[in-house]
Image 1 (tube, rainbow, N blue to C red):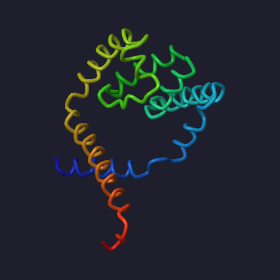
Image 2 (image 1 turned 180 degrees about the vertical axis):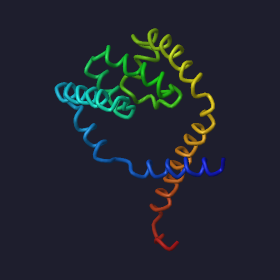
Image 3 (image 1 turned 90 degrees about the horizontal axis):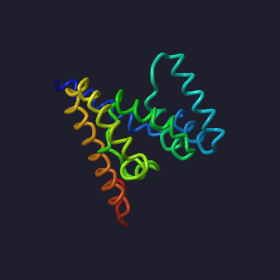
Amino acid sequence: MKKTHFTLILCFICFYSVSQNTRDVFIHDSISSKIEYAILKKNILKLEGQSGGYEPDFKYRLLNSSFTHNDILFFKKELSLLVEKYGFNVAYMSGDEKYYNAIMKGDLSKWFKKMYLKCHTKWLKNNFEKQIDLRILNELAMKDQLVNSYAANVSQIPGLDSIQ
């Protein structure tokens, strides 16, 4: 059990420390215009068809763009899939997402509530035992942010050098 936790923690740290790889940069740069968004969306769907699986990272990154470009049917489909298959959780949203207000209290809130309760329940039924590990991983991210913030504040103190 301890080895499993250690492995999960180590993987999380490794993935967290490599914040932007080539794929991340490509996605970020490719969704600024509606034409580029449409091309990227088509390529991701094609990739999923070839690999026989879903790309949850791509799907999550496309949510803001699909909402921004008013591709609501695609937005609903992808968000539903993320909730049901990957456990997308409202509690972990920052509130800065472009679609946050729409799904929480706006035009899409009735649809979202119904879909979320249905799909998230399915995900929980299949993944309930993973909740403890997910909580541990999320706590690590918060602790890491606190340590980084503290280190940044300490490094700004005049007169301190790397030895101190």
